Image 1: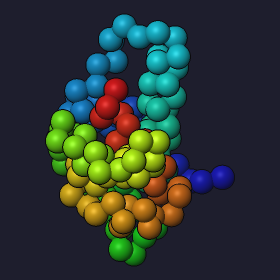
Image 2: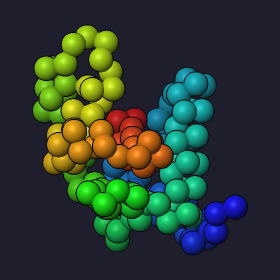
Image 3: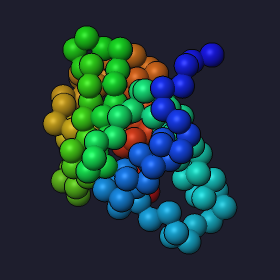
Amino acid sequence: MEEQKISQEMAEEEFNRFATVARLDLEKPRDFSERTDVSSSRDLFIYHVKRGDIEVNEEGWPTVLTQSEDLPRIEFTKRPKVTALRAMDKYKQGDQSAKTLAMMGDTLGIAPVKLNSLDYADYETVSLVFSLFLV
């Protein structure tokens, strides 16, 4: 079992700081499946904070710590913009993974091919954080 590096209470505080900077409205009315998705994502975020996979700075911006030598730290410093949607336009309909990588790359300022080279567990953590910005 992984050693917990941060307490549950502190990890929840980190998430709340992140939720503020991400403009994540946890009170927004949602249908049951949406509420479940947001709640699950929140729990996963807190889990990764407790393990030390995600750090949240004083302002609330998260950094994902990866096992990649090329991308050991992936820092989120801005929310996704509508222009990130345009980065997806060059990919064919149905190629969702390439579209997601393009949107993440545009937001993070990292070439999608570099994100594509991440270990799957690291990619999942980066995707989790990114998806919370879109809620």
